[in-house]
Length: 433
Image 1 (cartoon, one colour):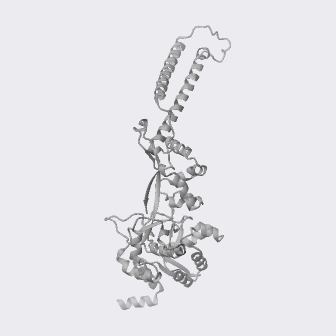
Image 2: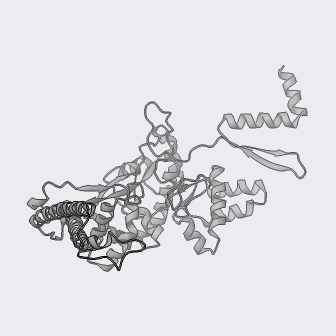
Image 3: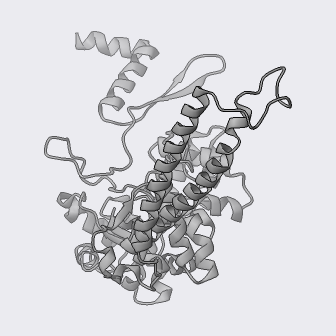
């Protein structure tokens, strides 16, 4: 039977192709073959594999040690919608192998995409977002993203947040320590003057600090960024990212409640005046009809129905007025809101029964939550900080990393963090990958 299979493989290109496809797919590789049509067409088949994990697998799930661990999803667009065919323009391209090796493989493919892909590889850097690359080289961003997506789908690259020396990077909880001996040899070959892989990972495992701290000098930063790219490529480290929610302190809640009650009382007063004015003319208008109006005698006695209606309206008006008076009396007992420099430290007696409130999603807020956000915006004294508040609020939802604000708002990183730090009293912050 083995002889027969060998003969079939020698004489049938279809059989040989099926064997190649089966072998490649079973080994979790990409199967590439040519269809003998006119003109011939090259095709590829694969079972897509994830390029990153957003959480550590549980004991009941199959683990993938060594895979990049991050919640930075490059396939979420500006509106927060996930689209596998879309790459966020604020991400960067990280090659999964040596650049010269990948270029050589693409040159051997020798197809119409080879030249554009090689150019994409040469200009894209893991320290620059796709948008920055497109602007620097006057390239249409859509075309660049298509080429980058091709490299990612063919497992030659991944999309990551741009590497930066000011960001914080930590040892990945999903790193594969079993590969440490072999990886240490490759690390020493790639960076002969750098500390050993194990000692460098141990340094990163200490108190989280900006990555630039690890470089001996500013001149060493490019090399240390190359080392960082190597570590992320192998799943050894990941970025420690910052997330936040809006935290509303009792002082702000009380201020908004006071404002709402004052508006409600004022509205009730206007309603009472309006009702009193309209009730005076009720008796003279109820009898009007098609042939009547000017002939009515205002001194004529009211009908039974009119008397009953007027009595009902008076009772209703009296009830509304009484409720408004009671509300006004209660409101008069409330202390007038006083804005302090630090609402989080305000321990006034009238605020003790009010608990701090967290706005979970600024994209979907209630009327009161929108008033909280507006009230907070009025507290900031610097004009720049005040202007950025409404622009930055959308990022304080616990899922948008604050590290991406500078890229998305086209601002300098130092300036962005300076503004965000002015909001820190009003943010609930957490950090994870």
